[in-house]
Amino acid sequence: MGKAKTGFGIRDSGFGKASAVAFSNPESPISNPGSVRILGIDPGSQRTGVGIVDVDAAGLTTHVFHTAVNLLDNDNFPLRLKQIFEELRDIVLAHRPDEVAIERVFMARNPDSALKLGQARGAAICAVVAHGLSVAEYSAKEIKQSVVGGGGAEKRQVQHMVSMLLNIERKLQADAADALAVALTHAHARASAQRLRVGVALATRTRGSASSWRSFR
Image (cartoon, rainbow, N blue to C red; front, side, top):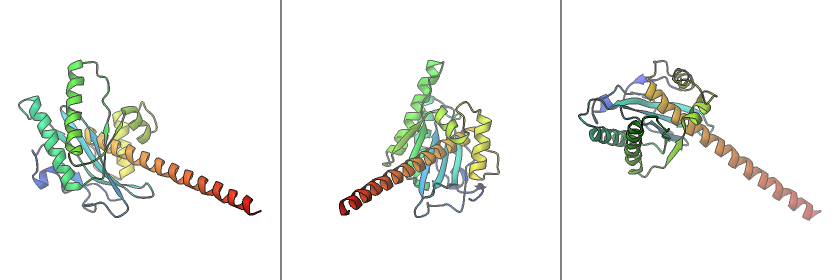
């Protein structure tokens, strides 16, 4: 796994607003044959985290890209939604993910905050679905359970585990770490589903072989 380095990202490529420093692995401009590229999104009305990983057939993950899109420089909330849509659209075009995962909205105490978070999430989903990408959803508890091992983990624990799992030495911004955690959760879910499919197929073949042997006898 390559370490995270400053490279191709929002500032470097010039798309969208220069709203956040973006980091990418220069060794992973496109996904390798046999790998699946996953875009993770941590939606927010002030900052939206974005993280991309590659996962190979063995379930091993490699860091590709991460950033936190700062939305606070916009004059009004609709412009924030526009920025989310445009920047995610450009990130999709630049990195060409195969699948997308996003954090499911939690029930906020403040109805206005919950509404804005839902709208930010909707803008993000529209940006990726417009490119024909499927979207998987995971709750915050599922993400923490997958990455840290406990559904009640704190943000700093998530940041630490994401850095360790992806061999990122530079300190991760919290929203970007959450987005990478979403991508890792989807990678783990894919690997578990693949192992289950292989197990079922093997069991089916074994039962078929046993039946054939009994018929032969």
